[in-house]
Length: 168
Image (cartoon, rainbow, N blue to C red):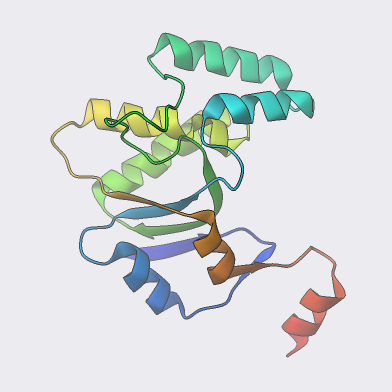
């Protein structure tokens, strides 16, 4: 009924039940944090292109998204539907409902279709879901990255600290 998706280099610091209650209390269905640096997908695109990550695919992806209505994120827009267009997908908390499962499936399809950079397709997928299902509830809790950092600690893959933690 519920799941917490955690990237493999992170370790939960809190009781999973408390995390579920905190993020999905009342009507929450899907919880994910804002990206720690970017709010607009175009900023994430520029950064990825600067690092030479899948440039050709990213250009195709954003030409497609632009053609289908994805706009630049404006933090001052009073009608914005999300607090950010770029998530940090290393911690996702989900109440499994038909809508959350559909969102996950649509998002995964976008990642498979274009580029493994999941931050790039998030806003487009969310807007597509809302457009396709205007009368169905889907409550997305996009929380601040500082909350994610308090909940899950980063361990580098082969660090001494992680090996010691696992042995305990």
